[in-house]
Image (cartoon, rainbow, N blue to C red; front, side):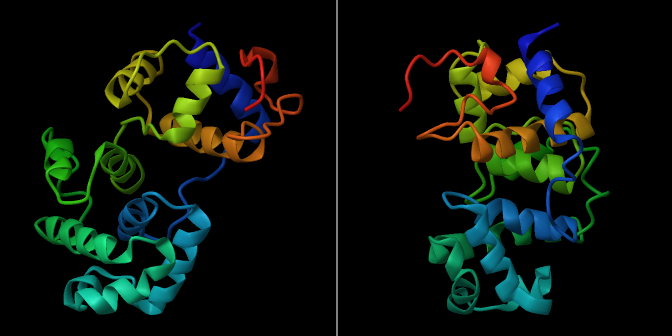
Length: 212
């Protein structure tokens, strides 16, 4: 059994099914994936709440850049992210805002990566959570887990993503719950500073010698 499988078993035993990602629609997931760039999820929640009943592609497309920026202000980098939201919404409009239409396309990830403001983590979050495609999301929390535990996944986004996907079944629900469990673990225990190693479900495999 690979280390990534062993670690998932421990996290799954501790957290169970986390029902991640918190959103009411695929489009809300897309918006959240953009807004969460370089900010805490609590700030994204405030920005999403500001939309009220207007969290729709039509509102984002029709709103002026300044109007949209004001709505998403709590998420930070609001002028930049307003541009990104318009770009990704314009891309989604090519498929009539229907997640079923582009799901079978092998070029879907390259298409997303060509959209202004959509990097690898954002693209993979959209593909996994909004489109239900088996692509593993790598974020700062995943990198932290790899650095502190016996996961020799290599360096950089692509290498770590490839390592997880090569050592796990190709399964959307597993990828979904694994990523969620990593996020929760890093927030609850494996913190950047002052980690709670003695209480962490992965405490017995942590290879850190000193706290940061």
